[in-house]
Structure formats: C-alpha cells, structure tokens
Amino acid sequence: MKIERRTLLLILLGACAYWGWPGLIQATGEVAVLRTAGTSHIEHYASVWYVRANHALWIRAENRERHWLDDIRVNPRVELAIDGQTRAYEANPMDMANYRAYIDAEFRTKYGVVDWLRSLRGDRDTLPIRLKPL
Image 1: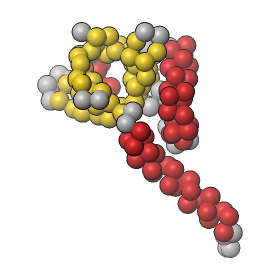
Image 2 (image 1 turned 45 degrees about the horizontal axis):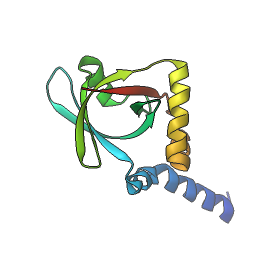
Image 3 (image 1 turned 180 degrees about the vertical axis):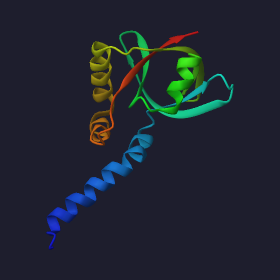
Image 4 (image 1 turned 135 degrees about the vertical axis):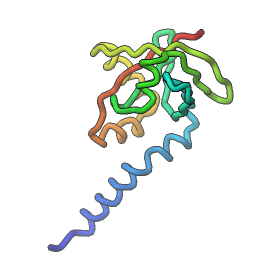
C-alpha cells in the first residue's frame, strides 16, 4: 500500500492538532485553575477554559466524564483562579439545550480555532456551568 506525501502530511498535521491543542491554549493565557472538593474533602485541581457572558462567569465541561463534575455535584462550592486572583463561587450546571448552544457559541467566539479543533476529537457533550460569586 502506497501512501501519498500529501495524505501523510495531512495525517501528521491532524495528529499535531489533536495532541497539541492544550499547549496552544495554554500559550494564550486564557486558562483558569478550578479547585473542587467532594465529600472526601480532598482538593482536586483542573485547568479549565472560561468566558464572561450574560453578566456571569462560565466554565464548561467538554464531556460528562470530567472528574471534577462529581465534586461539583456533591459540593458546588469551588474556587477559580484567573490571572493570579482566586475567588470562591457556587457552581451551577445548566444542563439545558439553550444554555449549551449559547455558551458553546461564546466559547467558540473566545477560543476560535482551538475550540473548533477540540470539537473534532468527537467526545464532546458539553455542560455549561454558571459560577455565582460567594
């Protein structure tokens, strides 16, 4: 089986985009650090994207398998660190189609091609989460 150079190049570019997207978004500085603690009271940290939309701060789980979602369901009190400032919030998952569409569009506007590349991975079942300051 002979593979054309062009096909091989496209495969390599696709692989770089698939595995390299976290590095691309980290370089923009638009990543926050989320701290959660479930019933075990063990703190968990995750890097998350965020947007400010409709007078609120939002984060989004790319799929329902994120480990920190279980913590939020048990204990919605979270902390989010953005640009060196950490604040406490109550996390409210908004599992409704209209919220998903609206917040997904806001993320696409803010993160552009990187968000689009992330969507190509195929495991996306987003869950927008509104953060209410405490």
